[in-house]
Image (cartoon, rainbow, N blue to C red):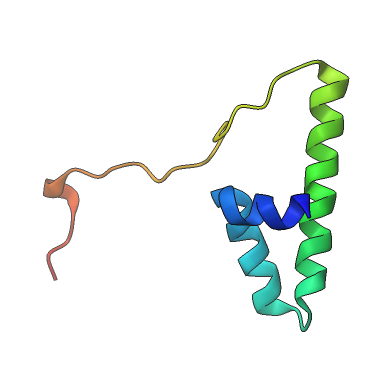
Length: 72
């Protein structure tokens, strides 16, 4: 159940889940993959004694100035 809720409310996990179920025949494979990601995250946070920061180290495409965009 935590992986299903995480897929519903966490954008990064939702994108991962959607990518997995698009390639695999069963949605359960995606749920198990998210469960594993959550377990690794929980263990890492516990081991380092850190707090979860939503959106930490997310790669965002740089914003381009309008002058550099191609109009064609």
